[in-house]
Length: 272
Image (cartoon, rainbow, N blue to C red; front, top):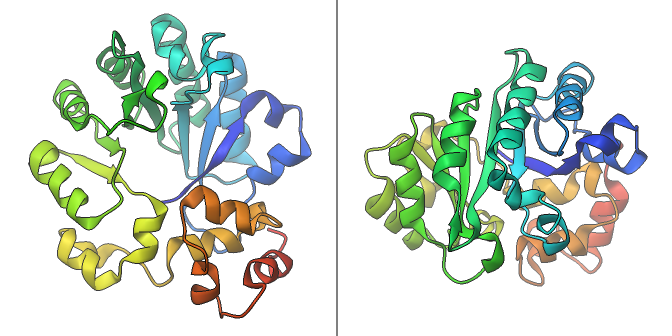
């Protein structure tokens, strides 16, 4: 399942045009997953109601993993779990807004710093307020996207809660995928969030070898190719490739080839 770019609840409610575009979907998307962020429970609740009733979303993921300093310095993003009462109210508001129609999940980091780890408390709060699953980016906010992810923290969270835990961080090769499952997640109800370039570089046969019961996955088209075709990303082909970590020439190879493939993808994208 692919989740949207982060949508800000307050901007969505103000009917910001760019934000509404981020909350749009291709008609062929049967699973519509939105990543939502906000710091006011009333806005989160209303935004989820709107997303379910007007945008037809089938999943809402609350993002409390943003490590950007200008956000965390004001107590937002990955610093929110340091305010457990507000954190719990935000999760509860999203669940209330969903009215039991769609699952609400939560994404967090290990903490703000190695000395301020909040993942276990935040995970338990999210579970108690009705979150259907928890994604843990196995780094602290001050670590950004390096050093190597701490998958022992993922295992700790898996053991601390009953809902599924989705591990995130450094899963960019099949070897690492197998290693993390074997060492940290074997026997638990859990999953792994993959880097897009790994999806782009592996075949369905390889995934059938790596993932038990992978026949249930529909990988008829590589995910990044689908993403750059999406109307939300019109005009953003090169930027998308960069953010996904795709190598130069990947889009040419997977979308018909020839110079200017990225530009053609943007030009041909339908208005979803």
